[in-house]
Image (tube, rainbow, N blue to C red):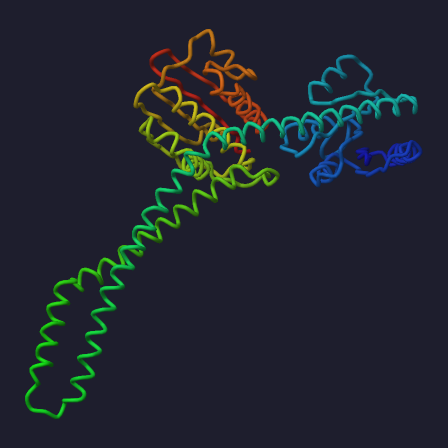
Amino acid sequence: MEILVAEDDFVARGFLEKLLKSLGHECVLAEDGLKAWEVIQQGKVRMVITDWAMPGMDGLELCQKVREAKLPHYVFMMLLTGKDRKEDAIVGFEAGVDDYIVKPFNPDELRARIRVGERIIELEDEYKRAQAQLIQSEKMASVGQLAAGVAHEINNPTGFVSSNLKTLSDYQHDISGLLKEYRKLIMELKDTISKDVMPPSIAERVEGIVNLETEVDVDFILNDIQDLIDECKEGTERIKKIVIDLKDFAHPGEDKVQETDINKGIESTLNVVWNELKYKAKVTKEYGDLPIVRCYPQQLNQVFMNLLVNAAQAMEDQGKIKISTRGYDGSVEVKISDTGMGIPEENIPKVFNPFFTTKDVGKGTGLGLNVAYNIIEKHKGTIDVESAVGKGTTFTIRIPTG
């Protein structure tokens, strides 16, 4: 394992490097907290041994920065210092330090503590893998629940595209017949162009063409063709959007921190779950002007999906769902409210617990809100619920923008 040593004293830094190499560890050196933070942000270091007092950024500030950052993996922080008071150790642990060693130290003790750190890192990695699998399992269960609705949404635009193409085919048949008559007329006129009087056969054919043109209503056809083509384009774009949104929502392994417009994420999620909502509720949206947020967009979309589907399922009859967003106190706030049955007061503290559900057997895993809670916590945000039986429920999400 590669260990970062943050130490401003040249002699102490060299001693630690030599010691760590003798213990079989690769070593990266930084002469102060600022340089150490630059190395940590590169994402390769999993363990840091840092001095407390350093210029630019001390060890406590470095630990606090690591804990506040949205790093993709856990970094084990070990504070190595000459401060030996119990109060100093408490300050260190409150700043986010995992381990605290007082100088001078025993090399065997350092080796043992590094091994403890390695086990903690391994446990953190296993926890993250398990959490990711749980999120993906819940996501795929939700996608399976929505599959029939999505198929219905796809079939609708496909149906009117097919119908329009059939009409276009009929129009084409009529126009082709008309054009054939025009061509015959042109050929006969060409053959008789020098005659002073048009033969009766030509006059009769011209009259027939005029009547046919009136019968098929050429002007209407020519105008309607463009409208039909536009509808076909709209339908195919709608199919494409539904499929892309579903693919982006469901595809594992591609979710990563991105600069995201939360309003667009909600719109994308609504497109996926629309069939679950449209027969149960009227959806109103009040989107605020939001700052861009660095987040895991697929995971936040899953939170929105879980809340929206729950809102629809909480309604016995036609109800209302309101979605509102705004910037609030350094965060993006999302409120999703419904006029459903509401949650009994005694159940509100339990709604985010794993496997807690009030739905009938087979209609819910009891993981949706727990997964939502874990995703929001991963983003260092908050999710709160207010509810009253018979009046409805409001979930409030806040994601920090910094």
